[in-house]
Image 1 (tube, one colour):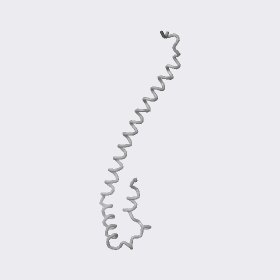
Image 2 (cartoon, one colour; image 1 turned 135 degrees about the vertical axis):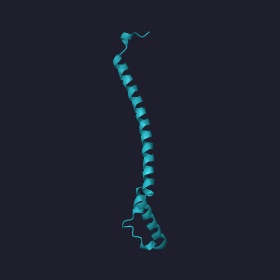
Image 3 (tube, helix red, strand yellow; image 1 turned 120 degrees about the vertical axis):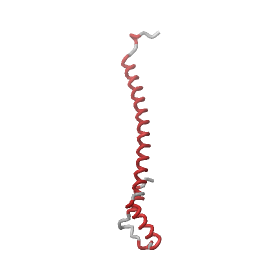
Image 4 (cartoon, helix red, strand yellow; image 1 turned 120 degrees about the horizontal axis):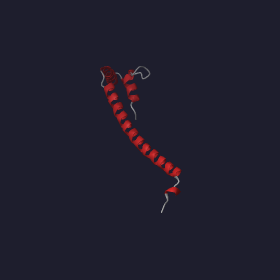
Length: 91
């Protein structure tokens, strides 16, 4: 039988601290996963709204006409907002 007087309370406290840190770490990881999903969805929604904006529609229309009619006249060193937008997309 274990006598309460023979228990090393500092070891019990250290063990309890380790358990508490492990539980806190577990819930922190769950929170990070949920935050990551939320931020990923927000990023997709932001890209979709930027892609569908009136300004980007005009740029896409102009760029599509250049691709169909005068592909050789496209200078990638100039301002090409459609290509710059596509470069920003995560792979």
